[in-house]
Length: 266
Image 1 (tube, rainbow, N blue to C red):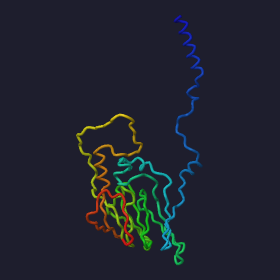
Image 2 (tube, rainbow, N blue to C red; image 1 turned 90 degrees about the vertical axis):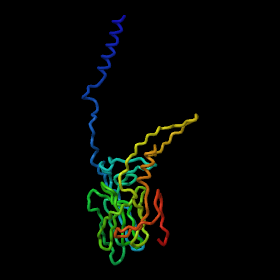
Image 3 (spheres, rainbow, N blue to C red; image 1 turned 180 degrees about the horizontal axis):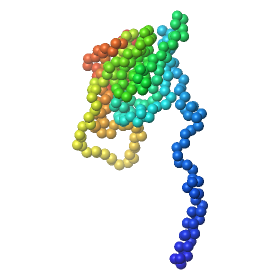
Image 4 (tube, helix red, strand yellow; image 1 turned 90 degrees about the horizontal axis):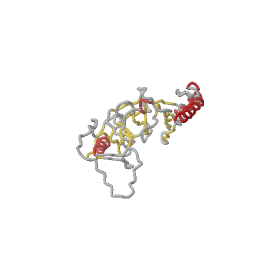
């Protein structure tokens, strides 16, 4: 009986082996490059986004990058209160940035004149471009491998300046124009990296029975260390910053300032 059962098993295994294709006949598992037409379609730069300044007749054409670099995608980040925060650049979120800005004039005297604003550092990008109220200046965040900085482009001279003013872009757009020559900006209150404290405390979970809903939001605060890191990076102070980069702090206005809106008269 045992020999008969063993023979049946061997016959079954032989059938399986005969029905299995040879390894060389299996589909290749090597990575295959897509067709050139598909690659060209997916990496084609998107159309420029127009930013119109009605009073001056200027149009800023914002040229956004088609793809994100692996270097930027692989940068470390912290999940803080719903924000995907990069502690190096001090920016939240991730997405395509601007490689260059073209300023086109529609004024009859300078019709068709084009100015190009590109970062001198080929690895740097621009974001959050805004016109000054009179249309002479453009402000932007200069995003590179280090701390994000404030940049201003003068359309009258065609020159750009990058300031070391410690703007804080954690909440999003850190600056808004107050007048033709001055902005209201959120500044970093603590420029040092966050040092995680040693917290000797238990993790307590209280459950009183019944359904236990689970949050599906990402990047939530999980413990006291996360709370402290959020306050460290997102606490800001307000200051007036002029087009030369000089900052004047507004006294007694600091904290977790999520939004700010200047009054119409500045």
